[in-house]
Amino acid sequence: MATHTINGVTLTLLQGNIVTVAADAIVNAANAALAGGGGVDGAIHHAAGPTLIEECRKIGGCPTGKAVATSAGKLPARYIFHAVGPIYQSRPEDARLLKSAYQSCLELAEHYQIQSIAFPSLSTGAYGYPVNLAAPLALTTILDHLQTPTSLQRILLVLFDQRTYTTYQQALEKLLPAR
Ligand code: ADP
Image (cartoon, rainbow, N blue to C red; front, side):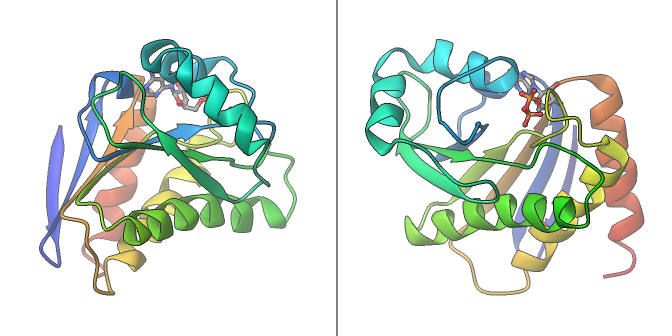
C-alpha cells in the first residue's frame, strides 16, 4: 500500500479486490450495455446482489467514456459508478475516452458530494489497454482533478494483481515530483 496527500486529499494505491473496500462510491469497469460481465464487473455484480442488474437494466446503457451511478446493493458503499472505458484499438481517441471515463466518475463524485471513491484500473483487463499507458493517464486525470476544490477526502486505486499495482506505483512516483 502507498499513500500520498495531494492538496489535503489522500491518494492510496493498494493491491486487492475492490469489492472488499469500503468507500462512498465504488467504480465498476462496466460495458456500454451495463450488462454485467467478467473481471471486476462480474465480481461487483456478484457481491452487490441481483438488485444491481435490475437497476442497470432500467438505465439501459452508457456511452464509452462516460459513467452512470446506481445504488450499491450489498457492497459497503453508497453508490456504484459504472464507468465505460474504451476497448483498446491503438486509436488516437483511446486515451481521450479513458481519461473521460475517469473524469465522469470524478464529476459524479462532486455531484453527490461524496468523500471517498475507489477505482479499479479501467480498460486494462478484457479491454486490452496496456497498463503502462493507462496508469499515467488515470493518475494524471485524478491529480489534475485535485487542483480544483473537491468534496473528496480519500481516493483509492485498487489494483488486482501485483504487476498492475507496481506499474501504477512507479507511474505515480514519476508524476508526483513534477507537481
Ligand atoms: P475492462 O473490461 O475495463 O478491461 P476488467 O475487469 O477486465 O475490465 O479489468 C480491469 C482491471 O480490473 C484489470 O486490471 C483486472 O485485473 C482488474 N480486476 C479484476 N477483478 C477485480 C477486482 N475484484 N477488484 C479490482 N480489480 C479487479
